[in-house]
Image (cartoon, rainbow, N blue to C red; front, side, top):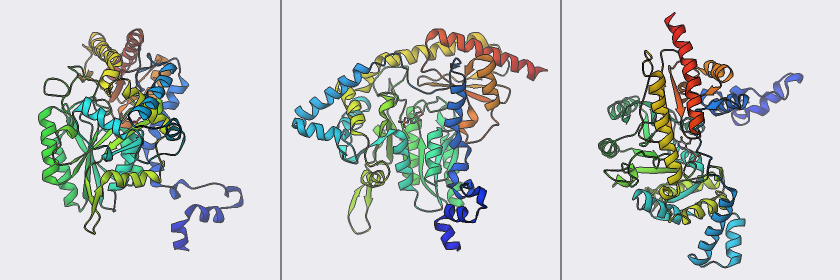
Length: 459
Ligand SMILES: Cc1ncc(COP(=O)(O)O)c(C=O)c1O
């Protein structure tokens, strides 16, 4: 009986429940992730936003919508089909099959992704190391699923961290050990401490997840020396780094990667194949296409004297999860790359200008409105989408409801990025989707809420 329950718990419950409850499943018998607070975050926040459509939203971390034009989708598809004919020598029939049929699990734009990484990031990779995924989200899950082999395995990640990473780790049954975050991103001293503590406790640390550029939610970035030190730690401690670069292009300085402009990615600095690079075309391409990718150029020994690529192991998991990323969606992203000489930096110049303008307006607007407010502070990111505000009162989902209902403004309470239900005096503002007039009005509304709360605290 016990053995049977281990295999098919829900059927046993159905059989043993009283007649009236026969169709009721007990969540305790479902996957443990379904009871975790982090798994509710996205839906809960969308629900509140959906209830108050008139509220000005600093909550959504979505890209700017002002330049959307359906004609672009057709243009990108045409550009990609022309590439298949001209550069890859396909007949019209082969082009049609490439778009209409099931496709290669690793994707049909791996070569264009490799070109894009060379052009925009100075990263040289073989297309065979690239797996195109259904968003960066799938890439995270594939990597975590592959790395989690036994009960003692853990992942290091900054605390607070992106909800999507927390969720992917929960689904992969891989516990996350939090590492402190400072003004320069992940705290490397704490990383070493946590790594050693985990090992002393008998855990096997598989990797450290990190977003060196404009991390979600903190908006903080690592400087070049911190990046180099993190790579040194990875080599010395023999761990992988999972580099998430969803926002790296949206830098407030010169465009190119290098000492004076955007700092180079970890992958560009990686000489020892320590970095698995997780890419997203959600913010830079077309978010609705749901295309991301992993670069996994590590060798995997098969135990019989041979070896293959980590990308091929990820591809095996993908073949059983999503089979392949929609070729039509890949064609749209491939076409956007081809239309911009494979540079998303070039493709995103108008959007980058908007994000810079919005970030400046939000930071200046906060100074103007709340610069003298006691115990209210915020960080000053040099790009990306997010600013974090610290206040002297608890910011929970009830406060968010009040902000939406009474003040007409939305933000994200920071507890969502700590995987808890409350307890933090911080909120995240996203600057990416708003127009200047909305920013001014939204900041006025936010200031009214904060002023009211400050008066309560003072009482
Ligand atoms: C840190 C981080 N990584 C990745 C993504 C994008 O993931 P996807 O490509 O699945 O949309 C986001 C989007 O919110 C993010 O904040």
